Length: 201
DNA sequence: ACACTGATTAACT
DNA sequence: GTTAATCAGTGTG
Image (tube, rainbow, N blue to C red):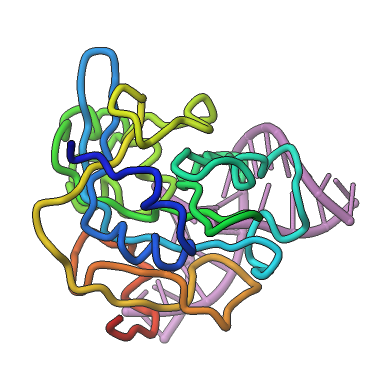
């Protein structure tokens, strides 16, 4: 099976975030399947990471971050957007990897309809955008991504990518950590990336 | 190319 | 009452 096993996610979220670059996000819908190669991710920790939703402990919103690895953590933010994460951590505590951008591979027509734009580079180049393109909202929270019958799961990719890293985007705390990972020179990453200081991992 | 803003909701303080 | 792991649109240089 090409599905990533649960133990893939049972490691520090920084390592999981880095290794998720190049892996494939699959969305199972009743009548179709959507696929995209993950090209940009960010790692979030627990009590060690002031930028994390889990920093102040368990709440109703961040519950998924404390549960079993290999499940989704989908949250709603800014009154408009949903963001997709995979729960990833080593041992107890909390942690997750935010999926910031994917390169669309299958189901482009559906994604264009969802997004209301046709330009392929603008379909999934941001955490809110890819959730809209993949029709992901709160109902997909805590889905098991290690199950091929799940509405969302992850499989291995067909090639390797050179990975760069930078500070995380859109946060005000934890800026000392370079926990954003992205496929180097890939045009499908979010636009903010052009500005960020980066270095090869 | 860049900065700034409005939209709109839920969770948290 | 304030904030937020965002986005699209507008205005300026």
